[in-house]
Structures are given as C-alpha cells and as structure tokens.
Length: 125
Image 1 (cartoon, one colour):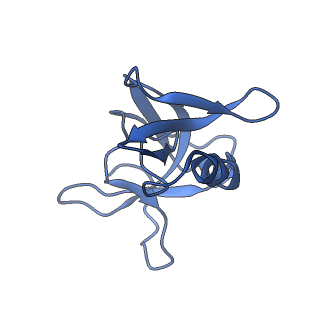
Image 2: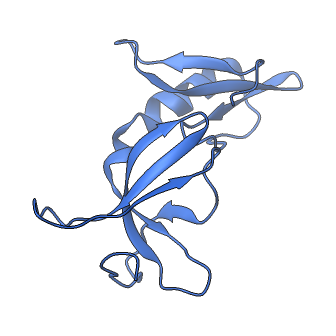
C-alpha cells in the first residue's frame, strides 16, 4: 500500500498521476507504478516531473521479463496500490486469447518499457 507520508498528485481533471514523497528536506516524484521518476528535488520540480510524465506512458507496449523464458510483450490493464495487472498483447485482434498476469506493487523491475530488440512473443508459452 501507499505509505501514509506520500502525497497524491492529481491532474487538473482530478486524475491521479502519482505521488510526491518526502526525502529529507526535498521531495521525490513517484509514478503510479510506485517507481521514483525524479531524484530528490524541490516540491515544484517533483510536481513538474509528474505533470511531464502524465498518463500516456501507461498505454504503450511493455515487456515482462520471465525467468528462463523469452520476454513477454504485454500491456498494462490496471494499476493501483496493491497490484499491477498486465495482459499479453492482442496486437489489436478482437478474438485474440490473452493471458492476464497480476504483479505486485510497486511494479517489479521485470516489467519494463519495450525495447526495439525485444523478441515478439505471442502469449505466455
């Protein structure tokens, strides 16, 4: 769960984009995945880091590294304190069979943005 001292940061429309947590005399911006997105900075810089990050990054294709297996191409379908849910990429097909995988929160390092050299793996073989 989100530590009590973390302060929610919302867009103008009220949508949560992350938190700002204390770091001594400074502040650190934290994404919805529970990952730091800034170093220890002033309050305004932490807010700016979250505003710049926004939410669009959630819609991209991600990679889930699996021990002993090929990296799996996934999309984030739900993120909240407590869990992150990803599903195998359906490549836009309405009849594709997808697998949903529930991860912990903060999201584990195995969930990362997709790199151009990642293999394309269809489903969790």
